[in-house]
Length: 396
Ligand SMILES: [Zn+2]
Image (tube, rainbow, N blue to C red; front, side):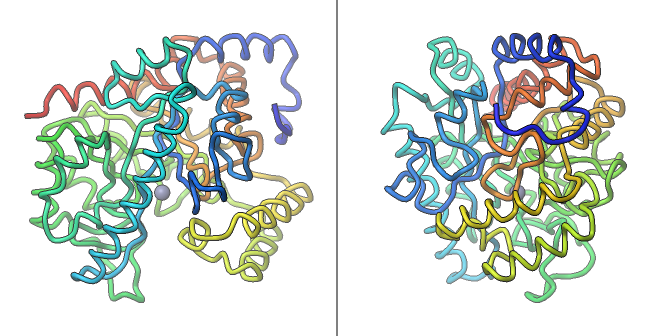
């Protein structure tokens, strides 16, 4: 296991830690949001080896992270033919990278399209890869490609990313592109998208989606709905987090909210840390999540090195903050509707869970708070797989 930050982790007693590791190894652990960096599945970033990335296959093995949703991510651009064409190309490149990983390492990782696939592949001792799509923007001016993406194994699609799009409003509108300040809700085209996703058995994902748009998507959906990587607003107020009404609506629909291990969404990062980090990001030209996703491996390695240095000098956002969000969500909507997402290689990572290798630390902290093994099974994957199964069963 990697470095342990967070005072409560350091105070964990050795017998609990040993028990946690045994339980962690028995669990089928699923991380619902893993981004893929630039050059994924080229000589720049070969996930079959130990890499500079937070997730690669060896790190998943070491950390007992059995399954992950790898993400076809597209940053938001303009909603016109030119923007759509560029987005489609970007999405295609992400998809090709992920597919190449499955083809290159069939003995290490299997591609799962259903919950049944996940357990079958896991039973063979291999890692499990699933595919999610972050931002429906590359679908462009038509939803005709939905069945194709379903056939390719895409299990969820988030309606928006940072910035409003043709389907609805984002939790983080882009004012410089002229986005409205108010969430104007799911568009008529967005309703068609939700319906087409229901038909195809693709989970509707509300992470990054504006509040009103998310509630309208929830009512429009005939199937359970998820938030693939979002934490809770009552613990830490942030536009990316879910409020109680959203949490309740997700539960009432039979869905699941996957808490997100992203420092900035979990707690208030100390002022000296945030100013040091923003100075570092400025210096390296890493000011947005798309800068990070498109940065060279050398630059990212330098960033991680210097960032670790900054964190080591100040109190960090850790696994304890992360589990505070899980605790709140479980108390609010129940153990059957909460799950776990890292957002690794897309900005995610916290003290104690900063790479896939450190995944047992989440289990340690959950056990320390008296969650049972059955609870852990649900949080670590049982819930999301149940929802995926239901959504696919309801498909036409
Ligand atoms: Zn995201």
